[in-house]
Amino acid sequence: MNAFTESQERTALRAAVAELGRRYGGDWFQGKARGGEKTAELWDEAAKLGYLGVNVPEEYGGGGGNIGDLAAVCEELSAAGCGLLLMVVSPAICATIITRFGTDEQKKTWLPKFADGSLRMAFAITEPDAGSNAHKLTTTARRDGDDWILTGRKVFISGVDEAAAVMIVGRTEDARTGRLKPALFIVPTDTPGLEYQPIEMDIVSPDKQFMVFLDDVRLPAGALVGSEDAALMQLFAGLNPERIMAASFAIGMGRYALDKAVGYVNTRKVWDTPIGAHQGVAHPLAVAKIELELAKVMTQKAAALYDAGDDAGAGESANMAKYAAAEASIKAVDAAVQAHGGNGLTAEYGLGALVTAARVNRIAPVSREMILNFVAQNTLGLPKSY
Image (cartoon, rainbow, N blue to C red; front, side, top):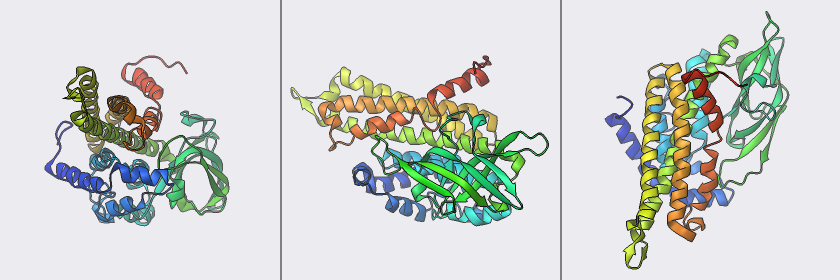
């Protein structure tokens, strides 16, 4: 398989996941969100069918696939109107980091639970005063005998209320230099000293965002992920899949909006003519289709590079894919709403809620501006302004 074609196995996986997604659909998903309910039924069925563990090694009960397979699952569920946000975090970031860098004990403990979908693990890096600057993280871990004591706070952490544990990005002191360096810890959500509270958001979603507070959280030595000295590598090993998954999530959202628009403009008639015949309606939808397809190709390229072990190449492509997918999804949702006219903002048609949801794609998990900084500095070789 290359970046432009997918194997028969991946194509079959997409078809099967799409069928599952259609059985639930956007109306079901938004009904759950508006009612303050979770989408556990879909998560559990997808898990039972093996879709959530496709990237976990077979020796731990997973499918033995790769991030491209998991991204395909994510995209198809999103394209059916029922994207699972925690897929971007739990099996993509956390399972990937543990698979590549975890200790044998961590792999035995956590990977089978990722494989069968019985585990949801959140990921916490963002802080109120650090934003995108990982060098300014203030969550710190200090040794106390064989234990670690973790203190700090995190913000905009998805799905903590559903997660059994959180992978926390903190910092430890280098014994040689005295400088702080990154470190990753797995913290069960029922650990004393860990508390969280929801952030009120203007987004219709079953997935909530949280502030997380760590007040002298005592952790055993085994909570440290992998090697203390490999944390920076571990972090980037998780963030590239995160961007690939975020791109897939956004592409799926754009496809869902576009499909609804195409169905509508083919049947909605004014002056005895379907409105889809008018170029003022048709062309924005055609542009949306083109840009979604372009974003999808870059996402496939990023996944192929990552799965081939090219972390540097994957980093560039994953950032570009996430940028392109976010812009394409926003444009697709906007074109779909406009094609529906006033109906585009009614709850009945389910597009108005996507306006805010699509806008999130431009901000999280990394902002458009930080991606442009990355490309300017790393791809074009331009100087840093900060």
